[in-house]
Image (cartoon, rainbow over all chains, first blue to last red):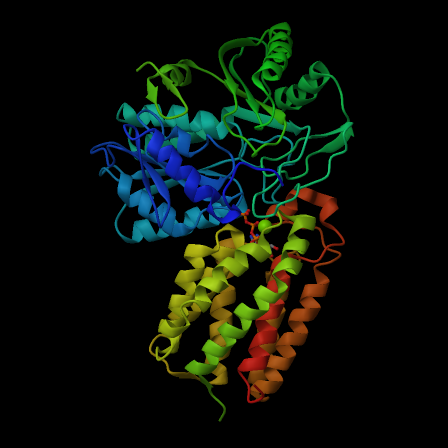
Length: 333
Length: 213
Ligand SMILES: Nc1ncnc2c1ncn2[C@@H]1O[C@H](COP(=O)(O)OP(=O)(O)OP(=O)(O)O)[C@@H](O)[C@H]1O
Ligand SMILES: [Mg+2]
């Protein structure tokens, strides 16, 4: 293992300390239990938005704390869900009297630990709603599995619901909006290489030089199939087609096209993927009216990319465009 | 009649913490086959934190000490196992509040409440390839033996055997809960990590809660 770290045990702690030191005007980092809150929390009269999950997906979620997005983020150990005390304390810290929404990615550990935190907070009189994001089309959705994983749409939901909360929506409205974003968003990812979890020290899976994994999860969970490496254009098609069929996205739709790096894939390659995806969508009469390209929900140093489509209407477009000011995302301010 | 003392419960927890530390690599190996290679690390982080609180556990009633165990696990383990084992011990502490010893009958109730809590939280049924596959038959075996007036030693021995059979039964199953379910068919022919750590819990109970320490 070759990493720019001091020791595997201190990776999360030292990283969030650095985040806090870099953006003291935007966020505060609380230790033990660990959570990151916006500097002016709790904002009175505003619904609080809390998310969280295992670390290793930076900038999600800590980088998205700030005005117009999250009120708090709870980082777990690398690729392990956070513990209920983190979400419980974070929920109390951001409760401005209008209740708190938990945005939870659909992983068993995340869902259960957030549920326990919500139970604790409700027991103390805080109104809590939770919405689970499950947008990964690589996973078959069935009653008999843990269901689809939460991936790229999570970032879009945090931005859009965060904007609505900033504009004064109620907790019920925030939850309904979050469900709407989840219902209109679909994603699929792929990996060129594995990643190394610091406390494990070796690659999560073996992927030969000339192979790729299509449908990879953000923790290196295996995907739909392992294939010989193909060109960027072919890969883009393999990711986009299942997404398009799933909702389905149709001629005349407006979409936000989000091309994400898994961490190791550089911008220069992301835009090659973006170019092809844009071309396919345009051919199908689907209008790309908003774009988002970069490493936003990563998997440590894994090389690879994911594509997320979100079907837009006026409400979602306006909220996407609304001002946001966080360490990792900033516009309109 | 045999009873279980608070000191024995502490011995059980301590023995289990040591067992988890010893089996950490093995549990993580099982989880790397069908999960995300963290079950051993998660459980060990939690039970080392419990072990560090041993002095605090001593002299407490059983409900109070199990509550400390539960809260420690809840705040240190994370993942599915943290919520589930945390819930198990939290439910266990609720039915033992104020008690300094437990009759076999009361001990079975502890197990039953713990199981019910895990099922309520995780919604797994038998055959889903989770810890419930080991826990459920073990609790049932214990209940049956105690109801038939068998000794606590006998009841725990039967629980261990049932947990082991349940653990073995997870191997051919396809996972339907938790991370392993993402693998679909690829989860077949692997032993479930959570069922394995649950089997150890019963093994340690049999080693510490009867006369034959
Ligand atoms: N819904 C469930 N009900 C009961 N047991 C479950 C459930 N989901 C998972 N498990 C058990 O948890 C074990 C995995 O625990 P582990 O500590 O590895 O958490 P994890 O699933 O990796 O959590 P995370 O996804 O947050 O990393 C499985 O082997 C299984 O026995
Ligand atoms: Mg695991």
